Image (cartoon, rainbow, N blue to C red; front, side, top):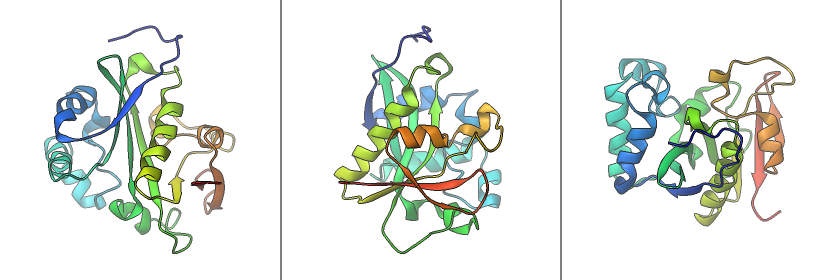
Length: 196
């Protein structure tokens, strides 16, 4: 695994398909996967998520991948998996609509970018910027006209690094997203309109 944190990464990003599961597993691994999340937080109810922490959440994500659904993108630096971005149609993330802060703002069909995971050796090297751009391209190639993100506004509130798994406002602004709604001081809904 690369350890040079200064050199920017120009990753290749690919949809997570069954043939890439072992790379996803290596990225999330035993002591990673955000304490057993396996990127299931946005897909499950509170009770389901905590009941499945660890092995059961991993198995749930594996079922999604094996079904042929693409739950997101995996990024590589050379042959090494170094990053992850969860992107899919908004309907896949039930927790969004159950949230008073992040519920729908209109009836337009939307794809959502809900989560990032960056290997510790790749942090601070521009990987999340590359993943946001790749997520927009991925969604647009599948017919998306609007892509949403749900970042934290670090200019309004201080967050720990662990709380920035959804990205920051500055990250999404740099990728061309604009604020579409703000029901909480530091948690806006941001949108990218494809083709504008």
